[in-house]
Amino acid sequence: MYPKLPPFPQQYQIFLTVYGTRFLIAGLITIGGYWLIKLVLRAIGRLLTQQQIDRDVQPFLLSLMRIGLLVALVLSVLSTLGVETNSFLAVIGTAGLAVGLALQGSLANFAGGLLILALKPFREGDLIAVTGLTGYVQVVNLLNTVLITDDNRTITLPNNTLTTNAIVNYSRLETIRVDSSVTVGNGHSIAEVRVSIQKAIANCSVALPDRQHDVLVSKLTDSGIQFDVRVWALSRDLPQVNHAVLEAIGGQFVQDGIKMPRNEIDVLRFL
Image 1 (spheres, rainbow, N blue to C red):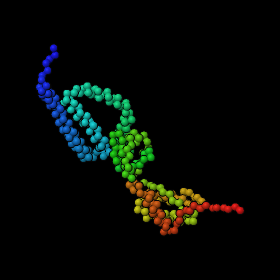
Image 2: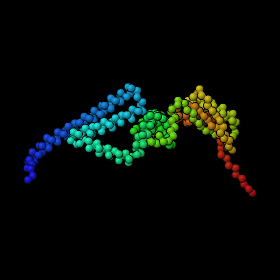
Image 3: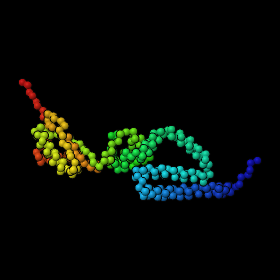
Image 4: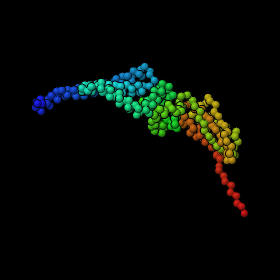
């Protein structure tokens, strides 16, 4: 004989008494815990700023702390609901091993993020170039680094890419040399053109007045003379240096009557 079950209303009452309280407490823990995690992370963020922790490391540490606190919250809620957390942790460990093997690339990116924060090949706000992509470092995340280009495009690079490829950091030093190329017609002497270019550089707003700028002949062609113009400027002015230099040279050439080369074709007619 099976034990006699209590009437349905009484079963409903027992279910609400036993499990309703657990779900209510679990819901309160979820809401309160999530709110508390936000407050804790905000307080830790302020503490890191007050302690002058590297600004590149702060988002990384906060991300790790957030993940750890969320995992603790989930385990606490499951324990309140009566779930055996020991077996749950064993399942998580086994699943974590399988996921880790499947996500070796992500683990490599995670390790790359640690290397970037430790070695600091660049910092937030630096202008860098890697694998043909150029942009300003916005943030270094757990698995990737976000760059912002001059035309306001967002580039997301895996950290492993940054640690296994050459990185050009344009912002590490205060000054930088920018090379431009200018070609003039054969009707002008080299000395005349050099003086004109030097006057243009002297009037260029981005060229440093206390540095030696070079104007060198790089090529002699049938139609003209090509000059390499090497101008020193501040690293922060890099995006506009080339444009400003060429604009200044073009205006000076107009004032000095220096003309660009013309492509000419000789047509021979045989009788």
